[in-house]
Image (cartoon, rainbow, N blue to C red; front, side, top):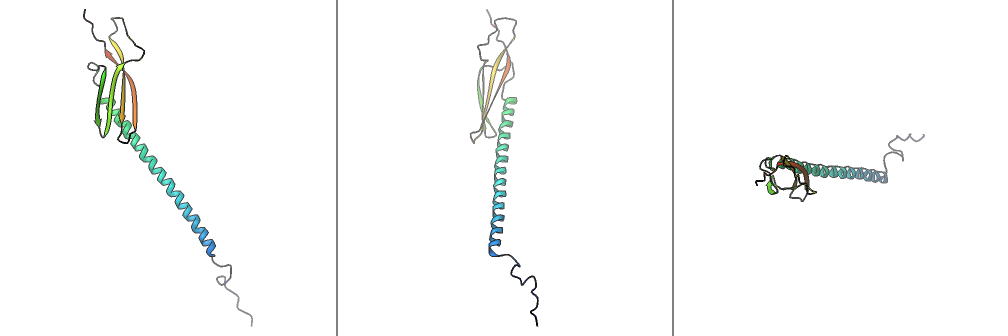
Length: 139
């Protein structure tokens, strides 16, 4: 009587060895760690982008609301706080000592600097030029 043929399950080649299982687990663990690292970096990047966007929106709000109307603007500084952001507006003469000696010039340019600072230390600086009415000289 001949021995019964071995089923595929009873063969020596059937299944995985412990080494193959450990290698497969190491590959899966490495893949999970790489995916976790990418997700963590992505979350930090999104948070940084949201912080920057909030800083820029605050700077835009300050630009639109904190600068006095043209008739009231004058050289000097203004400061305040808006949504946990400190802001400062500096109005100064335009660089280069610009001076119009012609009495017909009704407007003079003034440099307006806006600085907004977050609690984290991030800052944004915006510079613009505003025309203000020329002071009337009385003689």
